[in-house]
Each structure stands twice: as C-alpha cells, then as structure tokens.
Image 1 (tube, rainbow, N blue to C red):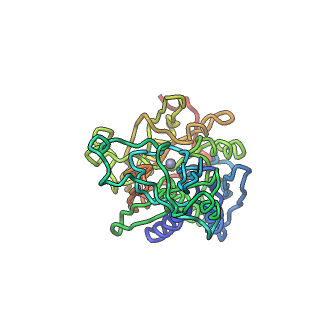
Image 2 (image 1 turned 90 degrees about the vertical axis):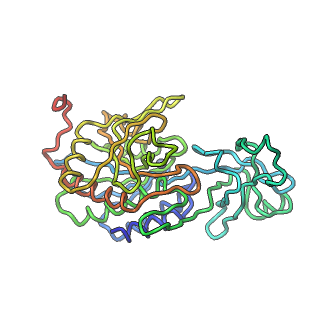
Image 3 (image 1 turned 45 degrees about the vertical axis):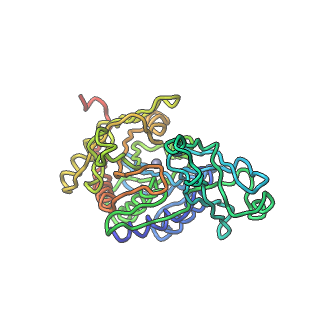
Length: 366
Ligand SMILES: [Zn+2]
C-alpha cells in the first residue's frame, strides 16, 4: 500500500492545479479511478464526485479532500519583461524570494520562472532581515520585454504555482509542492480502491473538491448536491515536533494519523469545525481495534472546508481527519508516508463500521 500511495502522491504533486484552475488534477484523478465501480460526475465548479453504492439503510458518507493548491495570478507585465503577481491563498511571503515557479499556460507549454531575490552583495544591513511584501516582488521568465512574455502565452490572469517538485528524503518522508492536499487526495483514492473490494459498507461519495485555498466553499457545493449524513474531510495537521512549533500541541510527524477535535478561524472567516460526537468515538474505537496510533489536535488560526459542509441542508455530521505536515504552504512541505498509510487503514475500517445501526442522534451523547 505504501508504494501505491507514494506513486499516486508523486503524480498528483507534479500536476499543477491552482485554485479555480484544477482541471488537470481532476482529469488525472478521474483516469486513475476509471477501473473502479464508481459513478463519476463533475459539477460546474469542477468538483469530481465519485459514488460507490452501499447499504442504503446506513448513513451516507462524503469523504473528501481538496485538489486545488495556492499560488499566484499574473497582475501586470512590466515593459522590461518582469512579471508582477497577485496572491491566491495563504502565501507565506517570507518563503517566496528565490523560488522557482511555473506559469500554467497550457499542458506541454508551461513556462518556468524565478521569483527575484535582490542580489545579496547589494543588500544593505537594514534590508537583510526584512520580508518583502508579495506586491513588491517580481518574476523573471528570461524574456527581454513584455512582448517576449506575451509570446510565451502569459497574460494578465495566468495562473502561477510553485514549480512542481517531489524530493524523497528516505523511504518514508518526502518534501515537495502541494503535499497540502494532494496527500489527502491520494488517501481518498486508495480508500476508494479498498472499499470497492468490500461488501459491508455504506454508500460513499468520494469528493475531490475545488477552491479550498481560495474560499473554502467548493466542497460545500458538492455537499449540497449529495446531501450526505456524514462528511469526513482529509487535510494536514500542523506538526508540533519542531522547535518553532513545540507549544502548539502534540502532533508528531510519522507517529500516525490525527483527528481534529476543534478548529476555528476568526478575522472575517468566523468559522471552524467541532466534530459530531459520534465521529471521534467511531475513529477512537476503530484505531484501538486496528492498532493504529491516532493523534489529536485542537487549534485556532486554521480551518478547512468542512466548516462550510457542516452547515449544508439540515446539517451534516463532520470531522477533520489529518496527516501531520511540516513547513505548510511553502514550496517544500513535508509528510510521512507511514501517516498516510495509517490514515487509509483508519478510514477503510472506520467507514466499514458505519452500518444501519450507526446513530447520529444527539441525545445519545452527554
Ligand atoms: Zn489544505
């Protein structure tokens, strides 16, 4: 299973898909799922919904991960051929200069570039520890002037992402672009493959959702169409096993999947997810039975699209399940394949436990 997850994840990470421009990623996933007994459809936003029919008496499940990634949009092409960008998503400005990027002008025609970093020899002492706002950065694609840039197919509005890359550090750990949330997508795909082989299962809608990094609401549209009883969202959990993150919690990379008991984000978003109590109980019991170390996280400052999915229709029982991740939203995010494997096992066994007796009645909980 680890080898399959590794190769799926690598292919997904090397396929660019800025928010709102996810079509290449969606087509790749649809191709990979083609041999499974799933009903596939794509909605107008670009969400891919793959349905596996199961026991109709059991609550239905939506298992989802987002296929989009953060990046930039071309804002202005200077007459000297340098390109200015607008940000799309939670861009860490501290980690941008000297990064390689890719302008997505069309499959086979994409253009490489570099985010300029002022030459070190010319950097005065007072600038050395200053972060440059993205609006002051520019990208060099090697063109002589604006016409040269436009001849490459670059225009205002062209999507730009970190140059897709995967580096295997050892047999378990890798770094690269958009581990967030292609690792979640790889797990959803592997869970679909394994559940398709099992008889005892509820109906499961595997959703590969768009626009998470942009507005968190792509998955909500899929949920409005599906009307699931339960929704399980897969994305990263912030690690807390490096010195800079130690105070945040107890999540260790490589120590197993994690479950989020609380998330909240203020500053205009004012949303978060507190899981339906049936779901932490389900996954705690499953983890114990399957001998999986299930870590826990509770945090403010970050949220996922489950926050919006939970509010659909008469309410959806939601939970965020996660893989630990380091260096989030940079061009080199790190994950550990053992966590993805544990997350897959947890989901397959946990979803199989959702039968006709599985209750979401709130009166059963104190
Ligand atoms: Zn994410």
